[in-house]
Structure formats: C-alpha cells, structure tokens
Amino acid sequence: MKLLNLILTFSCVFFLSTCTVRKSNETLKPNILFIITDDQSWEHAGCYGDKALRTPSIDRLASEGVRFENAYCAAPSCSPSRAGIFTGQDAFRLEEGGILTGILWEKFIVFPKLLADNGYHVGATGKRYWPRTQNVEGAVDEPISNIYDRQRHDSTPDFISKRDYSASFEEFLDDNPEGKAFFFWVGTGEPHRKYEIDRGIRTGIDTSRIRIPAFFTDVPVARLDMADYMAEIEWVDKAVGKMIDILELKDLLDNTLIIYTSDNGMPFPRAKATLYDHGVRMPLIMRWGNEIKKGRVVTDPVSLIDMAPTFLELAGVDVPEEMTGRSITNLLFSSESGDIDPDRDFVVTTFEKHTLCRPDSMGFPRRAIHTDKWTYIINFEPDRYPMGNADLFIPRWDVLGDTDPGRLKEYFKQNMENPEFKNYWDLAFGKVPREQLFNKKNDPDMVNNLADDPAYKEIKTDLKTKLENYLKEHNDPRSRGESPWDTYNLDKS
Picture 1 (tube, rainbow, N blue to C red):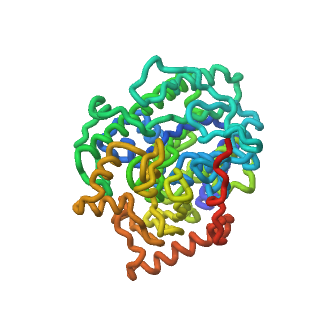
Picture 2 (tube, rainbow, N blue to C red):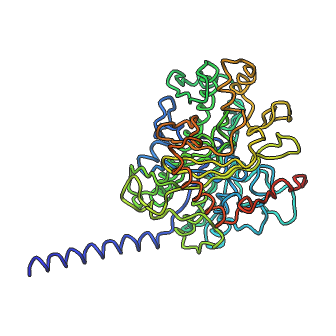
Picture 3 (tube, one colour):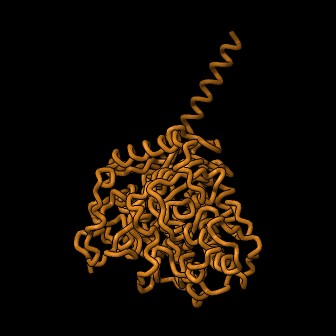
C-alpha cells in the first residue's frame, strides 16, 4: 500500500510539473531577434565543425541553445527563400514570389504584420525581401515597415555593408515601449559577393584548414576565394556578439529568442541556386534562456518556412491555414537531442528561376525531398543547362548566370576546355539527368548520383512517391504539369 501511494504521489508530481512547464511555454510571450545572413551554407560556422572559421558568438548561441543539423531553406535564391520565411509557405505556392525577380502579392499573409497586429513592436535592419515592391499596385508594401537603417559605420572593408546592425538594433530597443514584446529582423549583406580580394588571409584565416568540397578542385584560388567568403561570416559574428551584449546590458537576454540562419547557400559553383545541400541546407541555431535546454543538437529535418508558424504559436497568435510550414515548438521544448518527432522525416525544396540566364528567360525547374540521409531531386527540364548557358552574357551576372561572378568561377571558365578539369566542370555547369539520388552519409558533397543504380530502386521510389504526394497535397502547379513561372511578366517597373 505504501508503495502504491508513493507511485501515485510521484505520478501526480510529474504530471503537475509537466503541466506547469507547458503552461509556462504557452503563456510566455518571447522577444524575438531573427538574424539572417546572405548566402551562407550550413557547415560554415565553428559549431558546425568548420576548422578555419572563428565564430565565437555564433558558437555561443549553439552552446546555450539548440542547433539544427538538417535545416533547409524554401528555395536556394534570396527572394523566394525570404518570401517563404515571411509567409510560412512553400515557394512554389507564392506565384511570382517564387522567383528572384518576382513580386510577393499582398494576398499572401506575412507573419511580421500578424505579430504587429497582436501587440508586438516590430522592426528590421538590412536586407529583408528583394526585390522590394517595384512600385506595383497590389504587391506587399514591405514585409516589415518599421526600418532601422540610419546607423552606419564610418568605414568598412570593401564590399562590406556600412549598416551598423547592432547599433540599429539598440536604437530599435530604445524606441520600444516599456514592457512590449518585440520582433526584430537583422538581414546582413554578408557573405554575399563581391569580396575584397585576399581579405581572408589578411584577417588571419588559415587556408590550410579550409575544407574543400569534392565538387571543387583543390587549387590555391579555391582556398583564397573561400577564405574571403569566411572573412565576411566572421564580420557578421562580431555583430552577433554585440547584439548579445546589448540584450545582456538591457536585461533582455533571458526572454529573447535569438535565431541565427541564412537565406540560401554559399555563392560558389554547385551551391547557391541548386538543390544540393550546399545550396539549400542552412545553419539554424535558436537560443532562448532557460526555455530551451542548452547544448542540444536536433537532427529532425526542418524548413525555414517552419519559422512563421513557430513564432506565431509562441506569441499566442493563430496560425493561418494557408501556411504549409509546421511549428517546431515541440523540438524546441524537448530535452532530447537527435531525432525527436517521428512524423517529421523530410522537407521539400523548390527551384524555378534565379537570373535570366537561358534563352527566352527560361528557368531550370526542380524539386527535391531531403531526409537526414537521402536527397532525391527531379529536374523537370533536363535538356536545359542548370546554371545557365555559357554563351549567354548578362550584365552583372556574367555567363552561366545562376552562379555569382567570383574568382573560383573565373578559374572554372578558364579551364572549360581542359580535359583534366572536365569532371569538375560537368559537376558545376553541365547538364543533369531528370532524376538524381544521393546518399549524404556516404557522399556528403553529393557528387555520386545513384538514381539509376538498381540497388537503390526501392529507396528512390519511396522518396519520389513522398515528393509527388507532397507537391499534389500542397498545390504545386508542377504536380499538374503546369509552368506559370515561364509566363510571368517580369517587367513590372
């Protein structure tokens, strides 16, 4: 009898303590600081295992919060990726908002406005959604209308934004009515190209410690170009540290949910504007005082379109039905690492069009499904060149326009006809088959396509079926054989 009473007492205490934690999480309305860089692949931070980068502030967020190993953007291009974040929807659902040069129409609900309508002090600095509205009637005026861009550095290295992100954040906080929860978006201009040549080595980055992916040839220019990219990430890290300090000084750190992520992958060949991991797999770190168990690493696949419903749920705001993203609060409040939610086993990414780098401004439509181990990609127009045509020059974007101009791209172009370089050229710029399948555990740089290997037929079929079902369920025009992106009038000025 005593044992039974002890068991019942323990059960009641456990139940009540669980309810208390849940109640706390349900009622506590967090401040939210959302930091998003421009063109950073997931692995390029110290906490993700990079040996060359020095990112103590980003690493601090990870050690004091939760780091996501398998986070993906909606699309590997800034406008559709950011549109996906703002709307909480897959990029293929956003009409012209799903391409770089498109427009996000005001019929699409954006979460910052919902937060503002429900009592949040909302503001932003830096890059938000690009292109903006192009003065088009019926377009989203600005996803965040309260802009703080007045604070500037006196001088910065070449091609580094003069916006002082941390000073702008402090100005925003000083304007906040006392006791009002806030949401602040920090959109850095880094590490987007262009780069100051050799700034990486001048700032002390050890190029010998840089991991060169299998789709690059390991030549000095590859390491130097990567070092310049990394120097811009280190610049951002310093700003992150200053923002943490500001929150601490104002006694706001413990109830501020800080998010660190990026919009799409690094601006290098076979990365940005592709659905390979270096194009769509993002750093994602979230810190929220004692509300999130520290030092956890979550391996469940998540998408940046999950941010909108997560923020709304935490703020006590109803999540619109049209949002296809799913709240990750269960992952945040778990005490576990690894795989947590058995129903969260894949994410889907989208690509339609980046620059106008093919005849008749055609895109290169693709869809992909990503698990923690596999990626399956379907390329709807395999007769087109995935990164654009080598004989079609575009001002600002060069030939092969879906890969940003830079030193490593120039090296690739110079070796276009070199037979010893053919494999690297084909990986970066050559045509691809309709289907691609990669085992990321054995092939993390995704260079060995297994789609035609009979040994993986069952895996490919399963992933293909899940992808097709997802696209149909979420109303992707491609699932109906339609391609409205080819007909949009992009001259809206």
